[in-house]
Every structure is written in C-alpha cells, then in structure tokens.
Length: 197
Ligand SMILES: CC(C)(COP(=O)(O)OP(=O)(O)OC[C@H]1O[C@@H](n2cnc3c(N)ncnc32)[C@H](O)[C@@H]1OP(=O)(O)O)[C@@H](O)C(=O)NCCC(=O)NCCS
Image 1 (cartoon, rainbow, N blue to C red):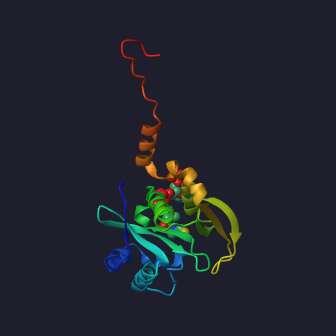
Image 2 (spheres, helix red, strand yellow):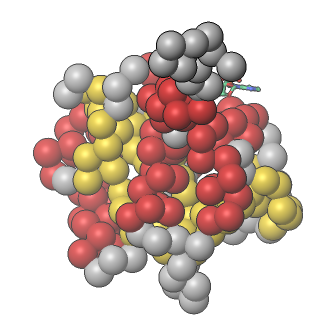
Image 3 (cartoon, protein in one colour):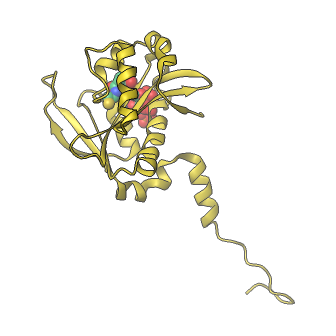
C-alpha cells in the first residue's frame, strides 16, 4: 500500500461527493467540519484553517484514487494540541487505509507541526474507529459528553513522549526495516593473521 496525503482542494470535491460526503461531514468530529456545510464549504473551511496554521486536512489517495480524508486540527485554547480525525469511503473500508493514513498524519503532527499531544474522539459504539486508535497506540483517557448524541464520546490521546517511544512501531515497515538494519549485530571480522576472538 502506498498512500499519498494531499492537502484537500477543490479538485477533490467531485470524488468526495461520490464517496458520500454527507457521511464525512456529519461523522468526523473536527472543527474543520460543520454539519451545515456542503462539500465545497468544507473544503474552503479546511483551506482557511491550513492558511492560518490551525490545522491540516488531507485527501487520502492511492494511485490518484481518492479513498477518504484525514485531518489534524489544533485546539483553539492549546495550539500545541491537535485533534485527529479520519474518514474512509465505505467501498474502501477494512483494508487498513485509515490506520495507514493516520500513522502518516501522526508523524506529520509530531515532526512537522511540532505538536505536544494528539487526541481523538469517537462514539463508544464506533468499534472500527476505536480499533484504529488502539492500533495507532493512542490511549483511552476519558468519556466525554457529545454535542449531538446521548451516547458519550471516548477520548484517546498520544503525547510526544509516547510517540517517540513507539515511533519504531508506528511508522510502518520501512522504518522497521531500517531500525532492524541498524541493530543487526555485525559479524566479527577475523583478525589479521588469526581466528576471530
Ligand atoms: C473508522 C474508519 C475510518 C475505519 O476505516 P478503515 O480503513 O476501515 O480502518 P482500518 O482498516 O485501518 O482498521 C479498521 C479496524 O477496525 C476493525 N473493525 C471494523 N469494524 C469493526 C467492528 N464492527 N467491530 C470491531 N472491529 C471492527 C477492523 O477489523 C480493523 O481492525 P484489524 O486491522 O485489527 O482487523 C471508517 O469505518 C469510517 O470512515 N467510518 C466513518 C467515519 C468515522 O467514524 N470516523 C472516525 C471518527 S473520528
């Protein structure tokens, strides 16, 4: 799988629409999303957030095909913290895309946006999203009331220190291979004129 995360723009509007933009707009709890928005307003809002450094919203693509959206939005009162959100079109679910996209986004958040903490929220009944958070190494911290449902939201977090500790396991097979290469014990060279000690 080789996913590309591209800043969302007007050229993604039609593909988002055909992937069921309504579900995206009503299901992903991010400040960039307002349930009253249409898809174009969502894209414009995401671009404004990006322009003022308040967050990044990416189209998740594979071979020029749009699969979904992944986003980080800084918390208004604590800008070194950001909320992670993701949405994958129904046709593409269950193939690891959300986990892979969110992994790339965590690296972007901690390494490029210099975040101290990433948090994510979803309904307790959203087993797929809870599983994605677990696979990413986020930790459950609290149940919070939700704005539009009686069911509480589960809040998960990962801070910079936990990210650094888990980075070898979170950044995918390429990173794991290079780590394995660094730590592989080197065979001892025979001493000149003698046997290896
Ligand atoms: C949540 C969502 C992004 C997951 O996308 P995805 O690409 O299918 O996710 P992945 O394939 O990376 O991982 C899904 C995991 O959940 C598991 N899963 C899926 N449905 C499940 C269910 N009903 N119960 C338990 N686990 C479930 C999958 O088996 C997989 O885990 P595994 O790799 O251990 O087998 C997608 O379902 C979605 O877009 N939902 C609507 C939007 C949403 O809820 N966003 C999150 C709110 S922040």
